[in-house]
Length: 463
Image (cartoon, rainbow, N blue to C red; front, side):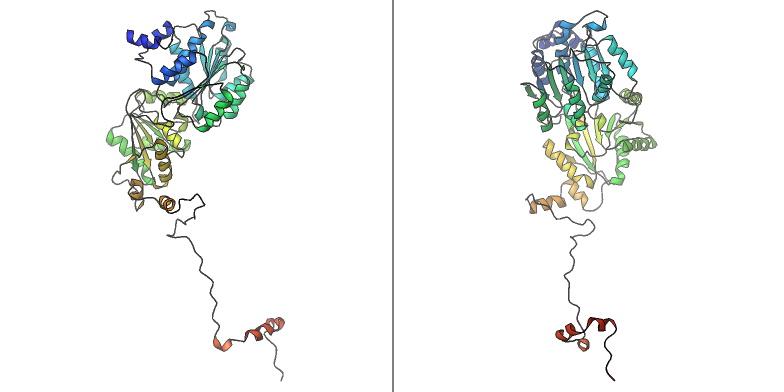
């Protein structure tokens, strides 16, 4: 225990926080915590990127709590507990988890925190805000609802955190974020934490951060080393059968499955239940109560399979999740990184399985280019696609686009190929229709024939 305490003490944390992390079982700071905590404590702006599951929440929550200690008060008066720190997250689930972290880390401090998100009644949130809180964790849309109702004020705010900033941009929250930033005091500390740092985030950072420190714990868009990747080529119409087969034959007990649409998630969960597999779905159309119940049943083991859309790819934190399955391969390779980031967390091993149809070839190629790794293909008998597409998907033969790219490396427009035929449609060259010899006329005579006479059937001969 003394080793644990000294490790966090060396980062500059105060004894109450050191004691709390020791009680929570933290063995030592993670790399992002080790580098970020001193920087945040110093008051610097920061943009930090690290792969998911590396402890980013503690990297900003612990130093923020410490910086608020001078303002802490045991008084029950709401006036003694103004909002001093705001954390914006893209999803409800992530907001809840971040708020829980602030609550747990600050258990020994007289500081208050609350969480604000949509899909639930605002009255309970209003009651919490009126009592006074130092830390607000919120999704952008619901926070603006409170701003409009004048139930939250930011005149004494000193720290802003954008958590999973890249995901917020992907989900279209940039206008809301700009509206919120315009409401905040100009003098504040700004922190950006994210699993990845695409160029769009760097553009936002230039307008938001002041001389920020930069951390990149892992390579951009990197995946956890402890996650194994495998792809199963499968005929599109056999995907659901293969998923049930894998779950049942391998005895999988806790599987997070990703689909591309909400309707697809509901349909797949229903089909799995027909196969006698305990399954449920979680997505944006579900109420918050339904989402919380589905997640609780999944964590407790009551539900074997949780079918989710990408709304859950950043917001789910399930300890020891062994498998993530991509039922639908994501169109964006970054989403692949976010999805499989749910497994292989906190030093544990994980497995990322993707069910790949011939239509997914280009998406798979983009994923492999992004993660700089070729993913192993394993063909399951009786489920693979038919025809030459199997060899292409297994990597034995290049795809048509690959062949075209090799033949024509230039960036000019490619010739479109009709998928029904083996080559592009080429109209035949026009040919002259032969004229029977008996009816042939001299070209000169043909031109002199009166058009009206031709229409009337020709001129009559004189009798």
